Image 1 (cartoon, rainbow, N blue to C red):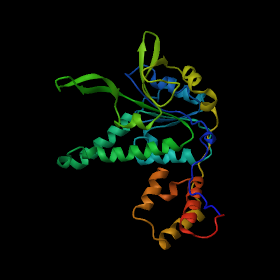
Image 2: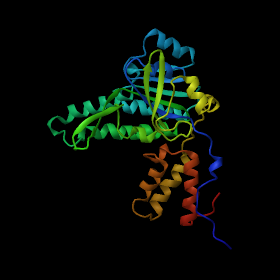
Image 3: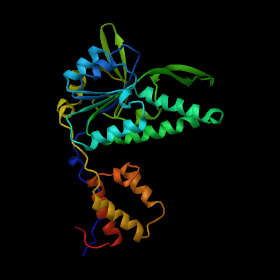
Image 4: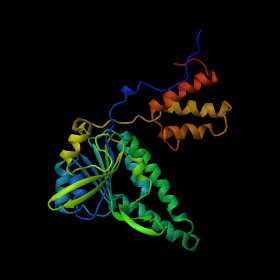
Length: 299
């Protein structure tokens, strides 16, 4: 009798199309915020009090959105991540998360750490907590079944010329340098006359080839990406149950696992602890553990 397979992969066609996760940047006044508010049912995170004006809040309210600003804790990474976790795991009508700007909260975290370290700040030490927060934030943004738009300031981009001299080579986003690699799409928004243009800086999406351009509007973006995907109701993640967590605790107390195995499982699930894992993911892992370590009948 053939042994049961331990492989956990599924048919790739069984995966549902995901909602877009994008980073946009550009000069002030090019329409980054105003167009982002055209996305459906925005949970708008304002880190700069930049959208507290009436024409912004009117637009947000008319689209079924909600406002989360500095008075509610938008400049605190722990609070913000907690809000994204709640959006991922609670029933609600929101379909889009906009963080405006990601530059402000990231750079504020760095500045706070610089002040804390004082003369001990060396070799980029003040960036470490901000980067750790960004990694956790991105993990949750990748899990939440919502459209995600991170709005960034623009800053100079530097490179080296043929003589090895540092020179300005263009403009880039002002945030964690690896952020564009963690998301589906990075767009530079520019204004040419009355028009707003999105220039694709980096893309994982065949509908948005690298270095291509398209009009920066919700309708143009949604037509290219798929309006039905963007506008569908968000699904919630069911977090690990008490029984599942009890089983995992039992495994760690009774089974000798290879060194570093727990960390490998958590990293594969892109979570920091077991309570953050979904019931579905942890259920699959429990089946794998039972098969691998002969822990009784698999139900």
